[in-house]
Image (tube, rainbow, N blue to C red; front, side):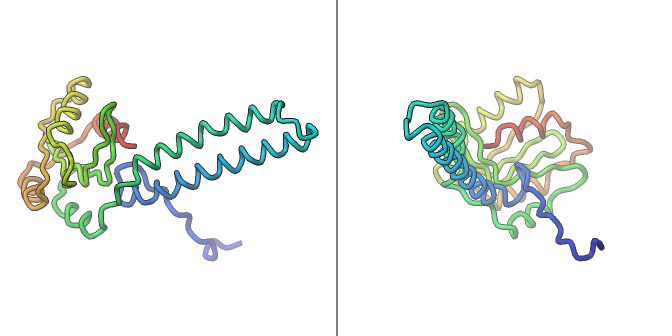
Length: 194
């Protein structure tokens, strides 16, 4: 049949892309309920097949379904306080990108101590610019965390972090455009995201 009648598939939003947080909150909540539902169904099936005795292999399998459900819940809780950045703001930052500059948005990442949020992260020639505009964000902690990670991977980038959106836009507009951003840098930054 013709391709004209087919509706295009919705493209999955990747880490660092606009709308990532809002989409992932829905997916992770749905995933949690799906695992719980499957666990309950397996438990009930086990009861029905074993004369309503709880001591059977199906009970063990049902209990194991709690693990992926718990993981999905933890991921949801990490994202719950945050919202995706408005598309208008994304377009505003994209205006200042030149050459091979890379922009990430909706960045929620975690360390062993904290969960952090950056509205935007732009990689230019030899600098990385972060906008962490949430009131309670600890900029010095984010800076140390990112610098340590870059240093461990022997990536030499200057790091600039601010809470001031206007100042952020001025800085990325004035910075030199990247001729190339190594995949190692983008892969590392994506790997940090929840």
